[in-house]
Image (cartoon, rainbow, N blue to C red; front, side, top):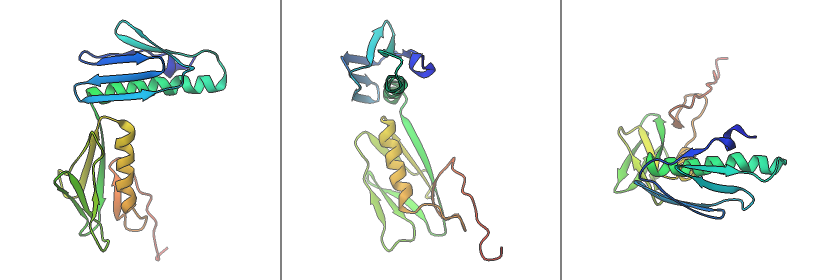
Length: 177
């Protein structure tokens, strides 16, 4: 059995979960999420936990088992705690600021780049060189952060650009090598 798929998902207090066959809806203090999963996986509610079971030990079923369990666990965590992704801007004159709910990024292009938040997400800029993307859906938060990073990815010579906080840039020496 998959170690990830076998682990039960604890349902915190204040979270309502509706299971209708392969459709799961989760409602919590931060919002609500819904997802539809493979009809081959059996999603059961047992007291204050959710258990995902697979029909056989075939390869595709083993893959879907852990995936389904993780996606449901991410929905439960998203409506209770939420997810965030931090980005850092390096470069002279590079900065970001909020214009209402939108994020305005100045990174050496001929124009400022304006990013609009997706539903249930928000931006925060504690410093002009720091961006925090927050939301309840892990996939949407990650995709929005990747979109922001793709505006000016970090370059290997001076390290200028937008990078994730935990990311390390492999630097190159340049001409003097």
